[in-house]
Image (cartoon, rainbow, N blue to C red):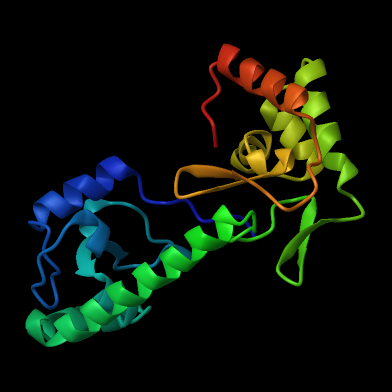
Length: 212
């Protein structure tokens, strides 16, 4: 299933400013990382990023909002005092902080903390190369040595262009673990050499290709 496009950051900023960084259901006012841009008509139903289709909600009101457009107006009009939700808000933040702290601890020990990238699988919480892991090196070499566009190379291996860029810039293939802007030596097997990886990064930069 193709990944649904995210709302452009510029659009998010305009909606947050329009709504004064305030949840339009409970009145909670917060920072952008505490708020959500909600699609009144969901993308799955043909909704888009038109400003009239977007509204600011806190993450709690966003989570409990109905999927159906016909039900959303009534949901939004049933106002609730944001102070009542503060207990849940603080609890969620606390859980989030504990979760992130645990993930940072795992990454520092060289353990992978997110979904296994292409070419690997997770077994007993450890990254293990799949039987097709050799294709990772093939992708890097094809990009480096062939005059082929990212679009054609992505089609060859069944990726989206953004998916291919993420593969070509993923330090996991070097045996590294990157999390929370920090890089650590991983406990898993590398699939490519640092020389090949660096050559690919140089070519991406020379071609003006932004990293995925």
